[in-house]
Length: 182
Image (cartoon, rainbow, N blue to C red):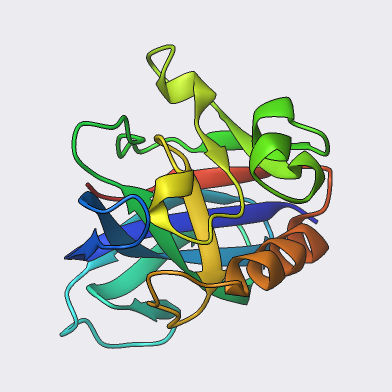
């Protein structure tokens, strides 16, 4: 079955990291994982939209375009580094994720280098964005770090469990990846 990930960064929830790499800025977001029929479009609508078939997110309700039934199977809080670092731009068509079991750069950071590479970026820096474990925002230079839902600690190990869970759902076959907002 096709897998689709959706990232929303709204409402804009910025934070300052005061750990070893003090002075770093980041922001929290929400990453959702869906399975079922292929999702061809995603849009955030206001909270006032009524009816079945919408998915609630912190900034409103998601409308999913699909030829059939889809089901949410996981949801994570994410962190991204701010302050001049590249980030994926929102776009109507999905990016593509490909599993990398032994990424050499991620391996320097943590646990053997498991990550997902984002394909479809417009610039070279966008094409180097990964989704990987990140105990704090200092581990990111443009990448996206999932952690367990609602984990907003500045330093956390829940990123390990989130990445294991994400791999359990998405596997090695890859997925479509929608980025909805800045």
